Length: 329
Image 1: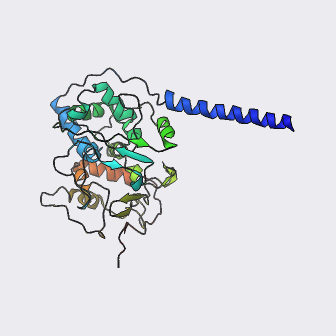
Image 2 (image 1 turned 90 degrees about the vertical axis):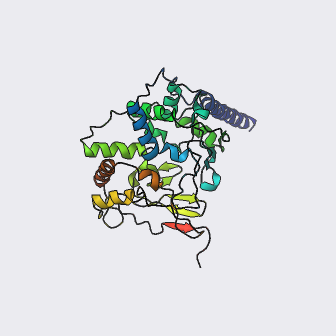
Image 3 (image 1 turned 120 degrees about the vertical axis):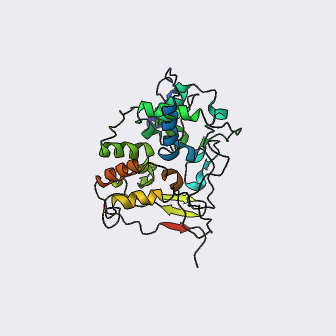
């Protein structure tokens, strides 16, 4: 009997050492994406213009790294907060920790090298080597064309410096270990031929991270066979949002939409007469930054439509679009 107990004790000890060793490796050796590249971005007017377009209307970096006012429809940016960081993604919103968007004005990143910014955007690894939470969809940014990444960097350097030091982010256990396994080395794609509408649409949908919001998740991972079929829930300050199906299913998705209607849906928020609507506690609210996406070029929106229509139709009726926290009587 004593021998059996001794063997069991040895097995438990070995397993414990193995677990400790694995956790130490994950915590100390990861993420492992390599050093920041030696890079100096030539901030040409063309790059700055392209970077402004991408950061404000496609990858919408400015959206997450500013403060949004959810008392208005679609949470428009609060004036004077552009790029200052501070937007909070925490347990109340369903995240495994408390994650704060960083200051990406020159006050926050002015001392970063272009190579450090490039690595942060494309791999999710900060200048000190720690992993960012992928609410910033860096797994998709890692596939962005190198020229587009450099254009975003050139643009960020032009932002007005705002003196603001957002709180540090902190992941809950055990996600503080899991987080280190997420960053991967960047695999940039060549920029698509602008005359190839399908390829352009695919590229834009990827770097915009559309699949992340429009796909249900299981244990934090998107369910690939349900890509773009909607139904993911987001806990907003006033209620729970359920994202729509954007596959070309005619009954439950956007299969019956014409390209003109799809483009018009976005451009309505770019009209100079549009003013965000103030909302009550029971009114429909969305995470979708319509004003920012509304600034996309019609040609690009048309390309996105063409790509979405090329996807496999998935029947998934999202019965409830929004459920207010305040009961509707």
